[in-house]
Image 1 (tube, rainbow, N blue to C red):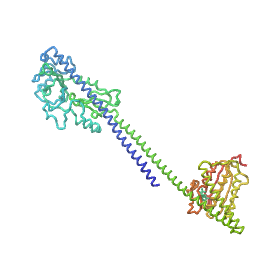
Image 2: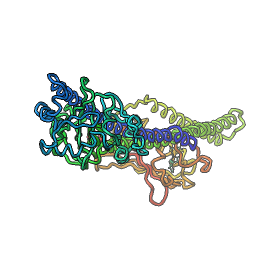
Image 3: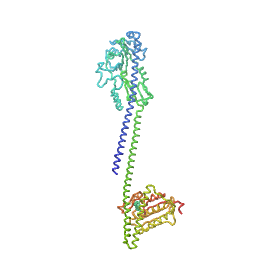
Image 4: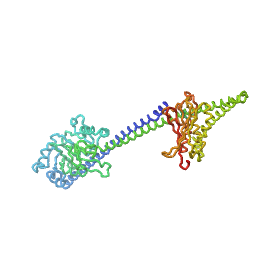
Length: 592
Ligand code: ADP
């Protein structure tokens, strides 16, 4: 049995637990993968918006070049240089100040005394534009990548700072970092590793041999964004414009939107300026800690430290639903493990029962063989004595013949029980139901048994009613019940040789008849009151009690009684011994 339990634990229970553990693990991985997928989607949204904004800036840059070319169309560059500020602003509202400088350090426009904006521009930018001083600028030329070494400003790159290419995307390593880092760590990494860094440079160095470009610099914490263009007709002159930031911002606002069809409808996208102020947002009423986006992408050197940031409208929702899925799956796994446990328990119990039954069957075979052998030995011995003619005394001859008859009857009873049991097991047992007087059946059975009992020193008393009690039943089957009960009373008498049979009619709860077979024997041990009705079960072991039996007598008695709508039960007899009660229903029509 222990071996079976061990096999069950090793073959079913442990693998089930391992499977459950693997399922929980894969669920965790699944949750991680889902979070990662969401973060990738959000990053995609931020990246594509940043690209759009860059596209818009490039478009403005090209537009500016077209404006300059249009102004130069009918006159020489130097002729319009002085009036460039006024003429540019008239045709191109995005310009706040238009300027013209020559690469040898002469400023032609705007006029220092023209207007306040122009004066301020000249004061702030003259030295830089005339290449008389180096300033910290963010520089971008559509022609190629920024390379600080080109500017001969190696010292400008601080240790740890990176030199970025011009495709406005995070480098591969940064993207990987984004994908695996928790959000807070990621944000910290973003804060510390902005890919945009200024370089100290003079204007002439920035221009180099390019024809156009963008320069951004911070003056009193305010971003100044300039476009410049060199006409091919006079490459010594550089035409430029300081951009009107509020107007540019208005343009950018139209770009910041999310596709309503997007699966990411639960996000807010915001364009943040260099001071992390919201310039434009897709959800104007949404509020968040703007410094902690779920995903973000920087715009580029044209708008340094500006970024497109993505926020989750309900950051807890994702983890909540993941938790709910996890809890449901956990519950399912727990139920599964419990079901396996209970199923295993039931299998083990059933196995135990089957083993006990197999053992009982083996005992049954040896018991029956023994029961057959004992009467056969007696029959053979006494019949041989009689056949040899060695017994002359008539009285002895009668006695021997009596023993042979009794032993034959015992054999017949045993064989009948075994045959009936196998018929019942196969469902082939047939009853001849007919109206019969139970008092007469019991009386006849007792009287046929009386000589045998009295010969063995038993006192047999019976108390039967005068009037018949009719039941619907099979006479022989009912007689078999009474025989089995009396035979047991004889077998388990424990030297108290008295047997009593009572029959009485009861009216409550329904009219029925009760037959009691009582003895003063050893009684049924406690806890075995019901088990004795199970097939092959013997409460008194043959070896210890010395009483032979098959364990079928009571099983048959109960099955027959139940087939008649009644039952056989055991009751403790007052004053010691057993009381077996046969109960059968009586139809009022049949009792007289
Ligand atoms: P068996 O052939 O062993 O007698 P039964 O089915 O007739 O088989 O009885 C089952 C068991 O019930 C017996 O082995 C015995 O332990 C117990 N039993 C039956 N009748 C009595 C009785 N009158 N007194 C005590 N124990 C009894």
